[in-house]
Length: 283
Image 1: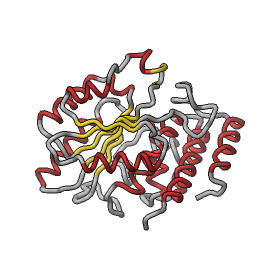
Image 2: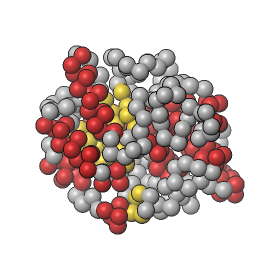
Image 3: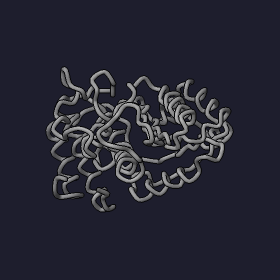
């Protein structure tokens, strides 16, 4: 059943609470980027993707999604659970022994919604392009979506994939860059500047769209729908999605320090309090 924008916004807040509780429970994980990408995931699974449940690995006739920056698994797991791929109660097993919810998504545990192991940065676009070409060979008109960190673009394999996609006219793929300007060691401009990323992608033959309000759900839905309208025209499509690492928790925003650090008890309580002010009831 489709949800209203207000319901999706409340769900985004709930997913943020899930992220913080999951990471806090095991004192391990990556809350910063997960919080920043919440609207993207809610837009994708709540409004954009054509998918079927129960989940099948093949996904014939369905849109596919590949998470390349797999360390933001908390937001991915919470989204999948909240949209019915597996029980919400399983989120409490995050990063525990024998859990299907490993720190980085893996496939051998058979977690519904996960089609590829990810977390070795730089590989996700290559996988997405392979899937997109397979769909073309199968006469399948569904689309392939992928998400990448901006720091991840410092990996060379990504640029080989960018070059390949345009050369082979893989125009049924939409690659989104989480453009928050931060990575584990600091600001991307300080670690290894990406320069004029839009100009670079366009020079590599991509059609590039940009959304400055990547934490505004309606804006995110709008830019992805615009990207969908541009597929099938001979060029791969990229979205530069400007987000805020740690969005929704004031003391996490504006810094890279929460890239991979769990909140303590007091910090969790403060964050949850802020998020209950945003959406008073659990979803």
